[in-house]
Each structure stands twice: as structure tokens, then as C-alpha cells.
Length: 318
Image: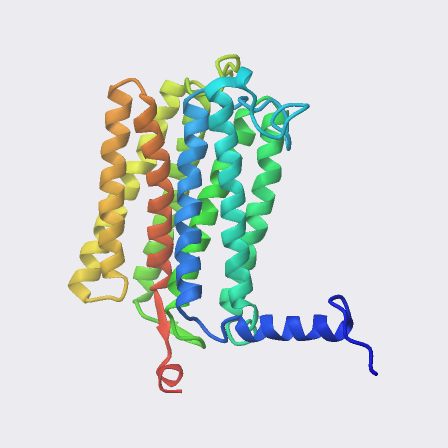
């Protein structure tokens, strides 16, 4: 009688892999859309949880990495609430990583046809892994403000890449053409530069302010009061540029007009929160909201940029 195939035999493994392959989406379907949206939400939420770690002084709540203490993976009662908050943020990193991995797997089968989605999903997954390492370096360096700022900036960029995936997920694959006049595209990219400078000075301002992440970590170097004023200059320039773009887009009925309106609302709220927190002496909750809004504003800008082009008519009819 022929031998019965064991669970680890090549035939069984090949059959299992074939079933997994057939189960994976062959195109963008509900599973891809749900996973992509959950990934975007998680990337945004982890900025909030990371902000909570910093703003509650829990940055060294777990004294080690990847363990929480030299003897324990999880926080001990002696570490109190700070340990719970820091460990919660680390746990959120795992959630973000699993969702990013799910998106990669859901694009795997049709990666040749949708290379744009494949590359974006890999960037997010690679970024999450890199962020875990940077987070460890942050703890091991005693919350160095420049590394903390870099950690936040990468998280913000991952939110933007996740937003780009959402846009491209609903777009037609293939070549694209300009959907706006050249001057409008140039002005949009200048606006992006103003946004980047605003965020950069915002990171430096927060890094020089009172919220160091731990009561024992003292800030030295930049004057936070001076930086707060410098941070506002590109911020107001950004607001003016976005207002001009939005009015122009609606008058000319250009493709990105609806998302420019979203960007206007995001930046208006962001400016309001920024002024409010400065006048109230930087309360933790307002600083945290300001951090999350910065990421959402950058994501909205990313969506605007992706609407500067549209699929060529041949791609639409094919």
C-alpha cells in the first residue's frame, strides 16, 4: 500500500500553499480595503499613543528594550502607570505591524499588475519595522530629543504613505496625465515645502519644550519660546498658500478641489489649536491633538498631490 502523506510532506505543504494562494485576493476587494483603512487608522492612533507616552512623562516607563525591564517583557507593579502607558504604545506597534503585513499579503497575488500598491505596502511594513528599532534606540539613548523627533517624523510619513495607498487603491492602474495647469502644480509643491518646514520647526519646538518624555530628562540647546515664533511663520505662509490653491481650484473646477477643502479645514483647526496651546502654556492634551493633526494635515496634502494627475483616457477605456 502507498505511504500516507504526512503533515510535513512536500505534497501536503504544496497543497496548503496553493490553497493560501487561491484564498488571497486577485484584485482589490473588500479585504484589501478594510485592511488598508485599518492600517491607516492604526498609523494615526500610534501617533496619539506615542504622544501620550511623551506627554505623561512615560518615555522611560519601560527601562529596557525589547524587554520592559531586565527580567520582564511586561511592566511590573513597581513601574506603575508610566510602565503601562509605555508598554501600551509598544503593543500598539505590534498591531500596526500585523495590519501592515496583512496589506502586503493581500497585494501579493496581483503585485505585477499593481506595482504601485505593492511598493507602497512594502514601504509601510518596512517603516514599521524600522520604527520599532528607532523606538528601542530612543529608550536606550535616554530619550534623546533629536531621536524622539525623528521617531515622530517617520510615523507622520508612514501616515502619508498609508494615505497614498488608500488613494491609489481606488484609482485605475496605468499611465496618468496632468489634471491641473503647470503653475498650479508648481504652487502645490511649494506649499508642500512650506508644510515640511512647518512640521520641522514644530518638531524642534516640541523637542525644546517642557514635554521631554520623562521628569529626569532635561532639555538643553534651542530656546522653545523663540522656536515657537519661528514655527508660526511657515505655518501662516502655509495657510495662505493653501487658501489661494483652494480658491483657484474651485474657480477653475480642478481635480483636487475637494481635498484642498479638507486640507483647509485641517490646517485651520491646526492653527487654532497651535495658538490655543501657546496661550495656555502647552497643556498636554492640546499638544497631543496638535501632533495628530499635523499628521492628518500631511496626509490630506498627500492626497491633494496624488490628484494633480488622472488616468489617461486610454487607461479608463481599457
